[in-house]
Image 1 (spheres, rainbow, N blue to C red):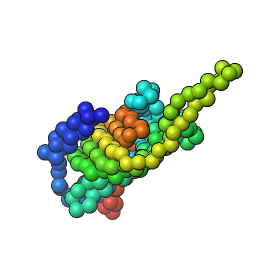
Image 2: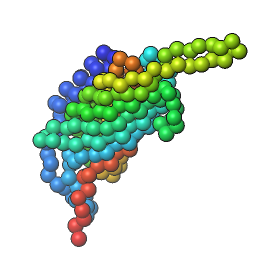
Image 3: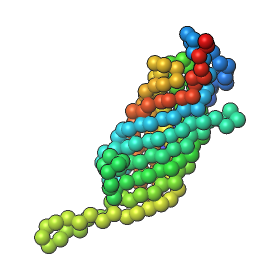
Image 4: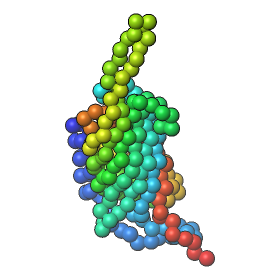
Length: 195
């Protein structure tokens, strides 16, 4: 996981060196847009569970917002051996708040966030075999603090909507994952029409 943290830090420094502060509204056709507005992200993808050495399914919902020229992201991330709406004892839930950096252009939004998470769920503990040869799997529940980080690269064919990839990692004492998501991006950049 230290490689992931190093990559996130290097990426954050690179974004900080080119970060923009221009918040002036502009016009495309007859539509008014404002740069550097808040955005919502919904992503679905896969990750690698380091302890169990297996691939898992992941879903992330996140809202990114600016407070006094500083970017933050709050959200929910789930990683499991099954799709998030199906019940499973093997599951990581992250509720996170992260600090980040952002670079936005007409067709791209690039952001990196890292912060704390409240991680809870269950993870595989051990198996026992019955006399009849059947396997019983035992899981151990957990709830604790962890860290969560993400790098988002979004292509925006329309200024306030786009699709992209997110490279992410979540670490706590019981459940460590890193992976990639395909995400939808919806921002509050559209401000109205010129009549």
